[in-house]
Image 1: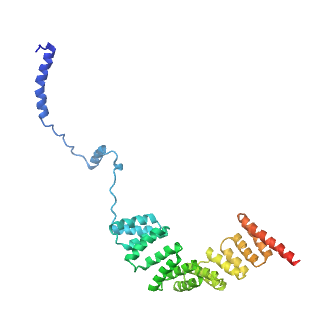
Image 2: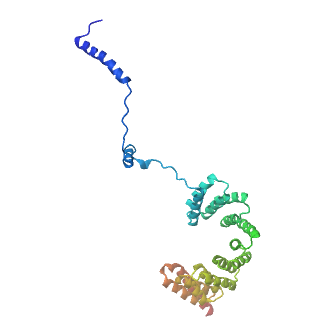
Image 3: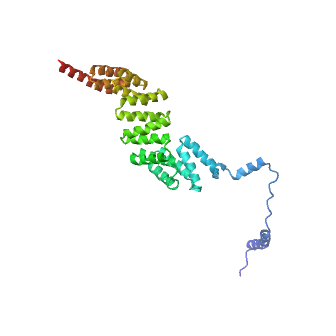
Length: 323
């Protein structure tokens, strides 16, 4: 082996002497860092924040809401017509208790009120399979069919409920509405007269009864029903519009005009009464009414102008025939 140069021999000697020392130091256990002592709770929180600089980004555990409170929140949301929130709360309860058919009923009602008829029908069908005695579920199912224009099915549901409890004014009203919309005013009148007798202050029943009489062209009874409705809601637009129609059909033109006026639109009132004059062959009076409607409301111009043109044509024809 060749001899090492003097510098290399010196470096090698230093390394040989240093290695045992490094080995002994590495084999010793590193001493523990002294623990932080004496921090106040506020200081400790700040110290922790140095190692957790974005605490707001940490996911929070889901809020645990008791079951009865979640149901109450759903009821409150449903009352306020906040359907999405109500549905969320009910469905969370149903995850744990799928046998809660009273909540399935409420879910069905939410779908019904939201216009989701197919979903409502499925939910209510589930309720009726397990709780066929729940009359309000039969009512809701009848409403699903009524909105879907499935009138025979709606009538069957309402009649089933009334067979169990004939004094349910709401169901009598719904049965009458189903008969009315299906073009059976005679049957509608029977149901709606019962509804108004059971609940004389139900405005919608008086209005529906008047509509049934109007379909039959029984104008005196229609007027009587609408007068009763007027005592409950004197300014109701629909009541006064229908009353104007019933009075106009009986050629009680001043009273009809007054009813149309109470509906809230003077220009429309004159146009409406002008139509009755026109149908009665009183073309000059009709023309005056249409002209007045145009003067009162320029935006009503086209409809009134068309009616006025027809009235003037009829006036000319009548004069030619008379000459």
